[in-house]
Length: 531
Image 1 (cartoon, rainbow, N blue to C red):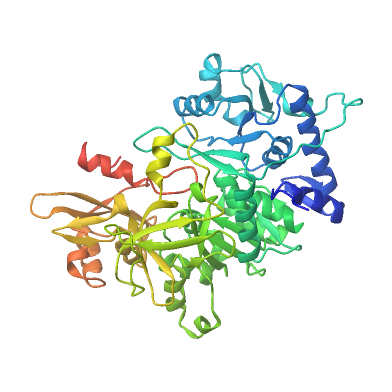
Image 2 (image 1 turned 30 degrees about the horizontal axis):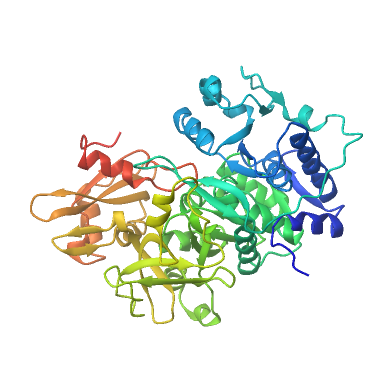
C-alpha cells in the first residue's frame, strides 16, 4: 500500500475535483484545472517525443507566467528534473549552471534570450524552446513553445512514470558570492513535505487566490507552485514586481495570500497608491529571505492590512524550517510589541524535522534565554540531498547528520528562535558582538529612511566598526550626525554606526535579498564609495 510522496500527485487531485475551477490567471488569460492539466500533459508528451527521458535535466528560464507553472508539472511528471534559472544572472553564470547541471534542453522566455544568444554556440545542446512575447525578437534558432506542445500526438499515449520519492525533482542553484553557484538537489519527498508545511502553516484553503510575487525559480516559489494546486486554489501570475499593479490585483482578483522578501513589502508600503487603495481581503503574507525589521512589519499591517507571517529557511531546506506561530495571548499586546514578536523566525514547522540553535564551540544547544548566541542547525525531511557534483561542499554544510545554516541566532524562553545575523555579517568590534540586523531594525523606525544596510568596515582601534548605508525617502534630507545621534538614543552607544553613507539604491539579488558582500568588498578591498 506504499505510495511515493510527490507533489505531482496534487495535479491529479485538482483535476479530479476542480476541473472547471479557474486554476491559473495570467494577465488576460485564464485556465481551468482541466485545461492547465492538459497543457502540462502536452508539454510532457512533447518532451518525451524530443528525447527527454526519466532522470534527464531540463533548464527553464521563465518569469512567473503560466508557462513556468506548466513546466514544473510537465517536466517533472515524466521523471525528468527541472533546473530553474535566475533570469537576472549574467551570461557567464548561466553558461556555468547550464553546463554544470547537465541540462539537455532549455526553455526560455523571449524577453531573456539576450544572454543565451551570447553563449548559444557554447551550450552542450541545440534544443531550445522559446516562449514568444509580443514585441520581442531574438536570434536564437529555437522552437516556439506553443508549436512545440501542439504537435501531432494522435497516436501517442502519455506513459505512467514510476516515481521514487527520493529521486530528484528539481536542481536549484544558489547565488554565487565568493565562488561558483551551488546546485541544491531537492527530492520529490522534500518538496512534498515542504509544500505540506506551506499548506498547513499558511492556512491554504480551496477558495484562496494566491499572487505569485515571489519568483518561482527561487526554491520553487517556496513550495507555492505545489501547495496552491494541492488545495485547488487559484494561481495569479505576475511577470515582474510592479507595486501599483500588485495593489490593483489585490482588488481585481481579491488576493488572499502571497509571499515575498522584505524588500517587496518595503516597495508596497512606500507606493503612493497604498494610501489610496482599500484592501478588504486582509491578505496573509509570508515574509522571508532576510530578517525583516519590526517597523516594516508594523507598516505593512497598518497601511495595507496585511496579516504578516514570518517564515524562515534556505534553498538547501526546500526552504521552510521555522515559522512564527501566532498565539492568542499576543493579541493583547500593542501593535509595536506584536511587530517585534513577528520579526522573530519562530519555531519548527510540523513536517520538516528538528531545528535548533547550537553553540559554535561545543555543538550543544544554547540556553533558551534570548541571549546566548549560536548557529541554527536542522535535520529532517526537507534537507537537500546534497550539492550536485560537489561532495566537498556538501560535507562542509552537513556534519553529523545536521545541516549548518550559517545563521547566528538566539532562542527565547518560549522556544522562538530569532536571527541576530549571518555569521559573515556579524560585526566584532573591540571584542564585542554587534548585530547588523539589530542596527537595521532601529534605522527602519526612522521616518525618513526607505532602506538600510549595516556592514563592518575596518578600523585601526577597534578592528572593525559598523557603518550604515542608507536610502532616504524621495525629497528627504538628513545629515550623518542626525542618523548617528538617532541610533545612539535608541540603542547602546557602542552598537551605533560610526559612519553613514547615503546612496540611491542598495544591491540586491533577483529575489530581493540584500547583497551585503558587494558592500563589504568596497570597504575591505576597494574604493570607499558606493556607486
